[in-house]
Image (tube, rainbow, N blue to C red; front, side, top):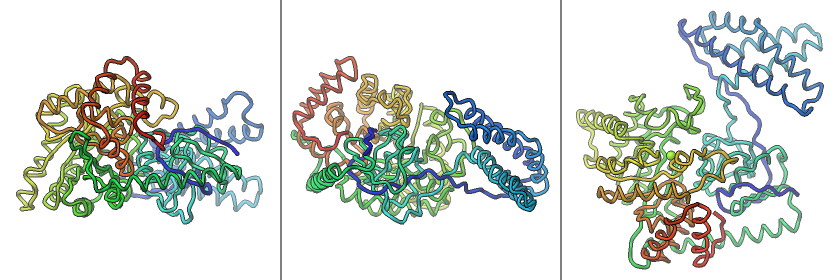
Length: 581
Ligand code: PEP
Ligand code: MG
């Protein structure tokens, strides 16, 4: 039995057999290129070869005798093959004559080469074919930014174990078959964590090197409440966990009794508790958990799932489905937030050294107005069929907001000309998730109808801590005084400007943060649907003045440790928590 400690990111307990998601099959794209693109394709090939060669060299330079003799010899031969000018020359010739993309050409060149070797009948040469495939895969991986095999085809219930999972893996996996998830990489606000909570799958991330010690078929326990994964548990541990799984399920069912009740404090302040969703299929769970509406629909998954940019009508159908099923509740749809780790498999056009600070969200949309306008037109057309609000992600300042509003205005004018009806008064708001937006929130509040604080990114950018990186997860601290002051500033600016302010980052669903956010004056909380009943229980048990008093105390404190300890004691004196958040 092996016990591994990671980060608890999605509650619940799963017991099952492991499925090790490590194989990478590369789906090679195939398309025509113009004669002018041949040199660009060749350049891409040379860059990918350089990177693959560096990979091999870095493996070779490992210290401490980690490589055996045979492995070293093999890598040496791969290095030689990678730098063989003959390969580049073959690829260049084929690019000229076939006029297709370089990935496809490489596969063809390799096929021809290995067929030639097989025809010699020489066993040694035949064996070299597998080396050629190996180096071709290394090159392809760089050309294609490591495409991953899809998890759509899972056909038995398993616990998914991986070194790293991408949001595109998480969204496309066959959710009914995934009992639990355990991965080495990631933290509480990784998009895979967010998806796991949305799909109610117990999950532990940040396990460092668990995947290397698990085999497909091993029995596994994933304790998403305590952040523990147990490999090949003994009988006693297994019995204990079967009991705790029952207790957890009972606790969850009990919380659902609050569904018909409002989130109203003991002194009568009504708070809106809404849900975050990634795909329309989540609506049933949203309604089952008693949400007052949808505070964040991450529309980018509408693009990531089909791996392309869907047309206006297709988007309209998805938005209508959500609006109609949530009626008369409100639905806030966020425009495309692609970039960072949220990429459309195979479509990412550029490689960036700092994607999280790069060409993402509205920055991407503003430079691709045809894609942006298609989405805005679909949203506007949907607005007459329900209670819709539009929200823009990653706004960093007033110029960016104005450019964004301009595209919205163009979309409105087009629809007016074409006679398509839309809600002329549609509320338009922004996420506050970039520190510069928080600092200028007084200015921005005059230009929009609402704010929603995106703490996942706001914390990442404020503390300069990658939200995906488990090694520095200890720094990712919502109770950092710097973060709390920014949140207070945003809430105060919104109220001074006469607009409501919500929060749709994961902090809004953290039971330990609920009273603080209430005391700071937050109007709306939006979170994974499963978090709603617990937050409702807390809000219904306190008064605003108690919450304000707690805020008064912690805002005087100097460090997040001090604040964390104070809040924990305060909360645990009043509430019993089963899940460890
Ligand atoms: C956030 O940054 O807090 C947020 C809600 O957006 P996302 O998690 O999709 O980046
Ligand atoms: Mg964000």
